[in-house]
Length: 205
Length: 346
Image 1 (cartoon, one colour):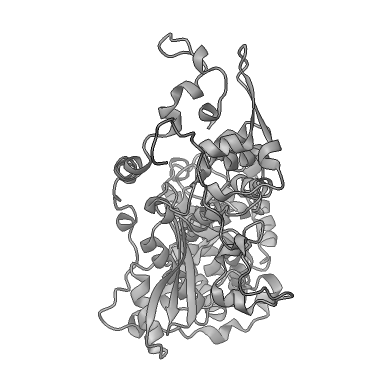
Image 2 (cartoon, chains in turn green, brown):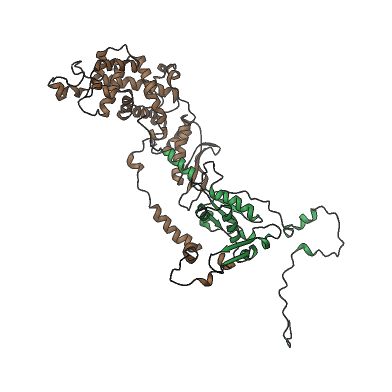
């Protein structure tokens, strides 16, 4: 009909609700880098929403905490090679994941998420909505934004040194050790440090 | 004028059938479609040859029919609205009624019925008011039963375009809601924040709900600030109380015509009387809706500079500009950082 209503109050608010950006948080502790990358990329691109379309700007923010504890399977820290090519002479480098992780604990998470976003121009904008933090400390202004928590991609297992004495006592045993038995794996052995050759004539050490 | 109007009488005959009232005499139609200003037209006044078609028939205008028809239309429309919105206050029904029967809306209906081709008036093109008046005058000519059909067939369908929250927008919905709920026996009414995201970002979103007695969610809505979210939630709660929800089924056509609407002549309750005397039951005026808000952009920039920059510093695109632009900025060679190393890629 000739008379049509404009955008009403509820229309405006519902539109805002539909296209507002959510802020998700996910803990990367003991999470496989590949699986985590796939999951986070899905949320960054907004593929979890029914309104998703590549040209719909509906991606969400994702905050990833504890990036230093991200996990890889088997010997992947050694065998996952990240290739870099600056397209200048002598500017190719293949760097294993552990070297990158040693220098920047957030970079492996970034690289796997960036790769999961696919090879397209949109990912440069989508990756800007990713917020990586090496440990569980998140700045206050980011924490205030967070509105939902994502389920982790893998179950977090308890390390053997995290069990209390009661839990150890209650654990079903097949073998009972004798009194003087040394259980050396109860606690990880501290790094004794590098052996230094004593200088001739040096008294102590 | 174009030849289409030459035979005004046959056009009238066709119009009578089109609108479903062929039994009304032609003179009545002419009277209803004649505006007061028609007789002041230069060609009609001077009685020229081949003047405005239909100039020779009828010498009465529709002034009294307009008033009569307006009343009839309003009566039937209010009865229809009261049948559907039995829990809504009379103020809401009056607001919907006055909106649907205003000049703009009626002129739209009249133009779709072809009335503005038949209206006899001084001005050209036909103004909204005279074409709406012609429609009202038609209702004045019709019998009561016909006016009911006219309302159900032509005016009621416009309801689908109406947003009930906007047409009766209270200035202080939360206070009104509190009064209504307290009269129903609810002791405690509190707005709660259900969800929020991006409080410090450019697009904050808050979902607020109104809870009655800490148990029942009576209405919830979203908004870009808590104040707006609570306000909208109160509006939603009021609409829910008045049984105006998105799944409300309105009767149209034969289904509406078969309803005994005559039984709904008694007005609904008045909101002003139901609320306590101190409560603000006035409506939002245009000036209050467009009040100047704070400078959001300036706030965001200052917040970013003081809070975010202080903690995380400048962004990588600014700090590591050499990595984001391949060209050299100060004509400096970057060969020394060409070879990627763990400390250059990360």
